[in-house]
Amino acid sequence: MPARQPAPQQTGQQAPGSAWAFDGETEAAYQLSLAEDKRRTTRQGALLAAVLFAAFGLLDMLAISSALSQVIALRFGLVVPFLLFCAWWAGQPGFLRFYTPLVVAMFSLMGLSIELMVWLAGAEEMARLTYYSGLILVIIALYAWTFLDQRLTALIGFALVLIYLLISLLSHSPLDQPGLLLLVSNLFFMVAANIIGLYGLRARDRTLRENFLLQRSLQQERARAETLAQIKSSFLANMSHEIRTPLNGVIGLANIGLRDSSAEGKSRQSFSRILDSARLLLAIINDILDFSKIEAGKLHIELQPVHLAELVQGVMDLMAERAQERGLALEAELAADLPEYCLTDALRLQQVLINLLSNAIKFTEQGEVCLSATREGEMLCFAISDSGIGMTEEQQARLFAAFEQADGSITRKYGGTGLGLAICRRILDLMDGRVEVRSQLGQGSTFSVYLPCQPATAPQPIQASAAPEAEQEPQPLRGLRILVAEDNAVNQLIIEDLLCSLGAEIELVDNGALAVERVREQGAGAFDLVLMDIEMPVMDGYSASRLLQEIAPELPIIGQTAHAYGEEREKCFTVGMHGHVAKPLVEADLVQLIQSLR
Image (cartoon, rainbow, N blue to C red; front, side, top):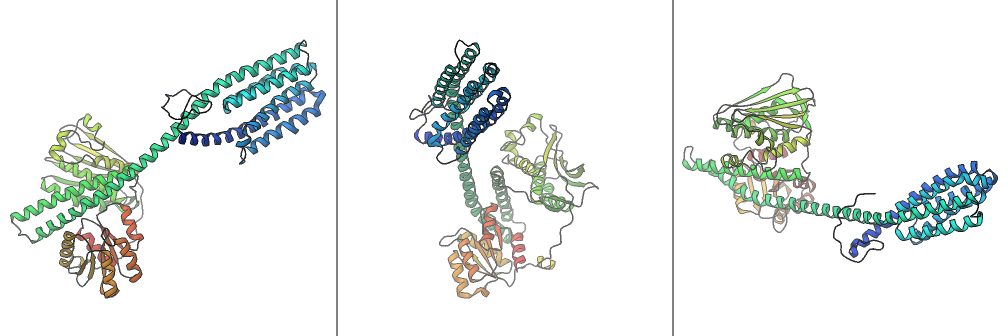
């Protein structure tokens, strides 16, 4: 019997046959669950009883040779078929209406068949039946104890006792010692088993209700957690949009100021610092979004052939300027036995390596930072070592927890959210990898990233859409006429300055409806491309793109949004857009995308 758990508080009417009470809605749900339980247990019990009585029927055929035909007719012509019928009827729609009489009939027939075997047996044969008839009664009582409710158990128990008394008295004289022994044993087993059954079923009713309440609570908690997760995701997506939109303005205006300021002027230094601060804020926002996506299970790994040497060199190029600013030597070492191409997620691997290298540079005052790539058996190993401040064992123990850093002074001195390493570990878990750290206080640290080594063949080269020389042109978009739909005045100023500086001719509108109107008025050939914001008044970018696909299906559309989730990108392609860029806009990415659509 399951151990009793602490009883949760319940309110409502008294549940039949139990000291537990549910409210009306919960009691109704419990009764539905109980109805299914009755169907299942009756079917299982009837099938089990049919097998047992068929087996004992074979024993009866050996034990009662004087009445063989009656034994066969009773066991295999009546009891076993009726039990199989009960198992079938348990799955029918009208079963619950006849549940009590059906189960009473099933048990009564089983008890009656046992006594009839005694009636058919002779004196010597009857003595041999005494033990196993009592054993069958125990099986019946245990079944009642396990599966039936209290009232039904009591009803069956009294019915069986009366049947045993009646048939035993009619078939044998109480003065007959074997008959008296059989009568006493039958009464003892049935009365004892049903008393135990009554007590056990009270406990089972309580356990059933406890389990039902627990499952219902877990389902409610799960639904509540899923709702909260959805609210959290929506909140983060909206906050990302609301933060990225003005941040796009800050970065764009700072770029304009930096470009137009004198080479050595104080204003140039100010604009440069504004850009650095804005990019730091953008990195923090991206960390929070990545962590949220990982928690929600929405961060997906995309495996593709990656040139390892090029990936490492690209990471080193990105970090070279930062290391130079701090006066650190930045080195890379690649083992000779590395495969040229390996199957992995290049974007996420770069993210992990950049995060670890950024930390190494940030926490190293002097000396060097080294990235080495080796192969260890079936694993790739990327080790980032530095000669920085190092860590104690206590600090290492909490290093990969979210929003944690080695200690509070780290945050005050070096900044950061404490999410970077937590994100790295979660990403590596998704990639079937791991990260390890070795460090001593004052002697630097080494972070080792292990990933499955899956050698791959080189991917097919992609034909470039523009000549290499075109990328070096000062105005790579010269001659293009671009329709821009953007409702934010600051973003309009930034996009206009950016595209015009790249040689494009643009026409600005404030919403999607005006964009559709311009194409209708001037024709599809009037524009080479549409740069469409997603969230705008009057008509959003999705609706406008659907209409433009009907009017001008050959006109390329690029969606621009401050939302950073992959779902937004997929939705852009679903409505017929040909590309997607996220705010803040990156000039090189935008130019490359536009040139690929020409």
